[in-house]
Amino acid sequence: MDFDTITYELRDGVAHVRLNRPEGANAVNPALSADLRAVMLEIEHDHEAKAVSVTAEGKVFCAGGDLKEFAAAGDGLPRLAADMLVDFHGAIYKMNRMPKPVIAGVGGAAGGAGLSLVSAFDLVVAGESAKFTMAYTRAGVTPDGTSSYFLARHIGLRRMLELTLTNRVLSAAEAEAWGLVNKVVPDDEVDDASAELAQQLADGPAWASGHAKRVIYAGFEAPLEEAGEFEGVMITEAMATHDGREGIAAFAEKRSPNFQGR
Image (tube, rainbow, N blue to C red; front, side, top):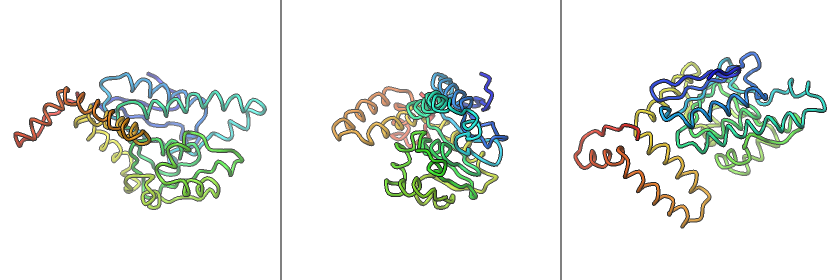
């Protein structure tokens, strides 16, 4: 597929997605939102894609919403935003629901919708000079990008309120300490670290990893019995796969498993 605002390549089971609006600081606009939703739909239905790596071209991961484009919309802005969020939120829903780990490599700044996007990834590697800020109320608007769902769960309600109401800027080290990112690496290693982690997951028991993601998200807020029932359904299904049988046999036989991703 061809896209205007992102690049996409599938290599060795890893779907490599790269935000590609460096001249606009990779800001979220209708075009990028539509491309992001389309590529996530493509990845969801591509059985060769086992894991996803998302990075960005240029010095900024994502500066948030494209305020210049929003200002130019004049009185048509509410409708433009509503249409855009169908795609932007739709991309995030796809990202979250697909049984494939989505890893982000974040260099530079992630603000507003960029921070919302970061909070929706499954795993996040950040460069040591990366910065994170909500920035919504600074522009006189409220949060979007599902940050009210994901970000508060990662960092806690009181910290979510602090970031939203004060627009405090978090350093990469603070973001790691708060649980927003998993790992901080040198700036020039961000892209490789994201790709390597995605490759590691794609090369392993990919079916189990992807469906373990589903179990964790489903169980996070479910009643105890519902969480347990879903766990039971999924682990018995896993035991019927090649990788489930192979992993158990390899453990019993004290050898390395030969996973095939299914």
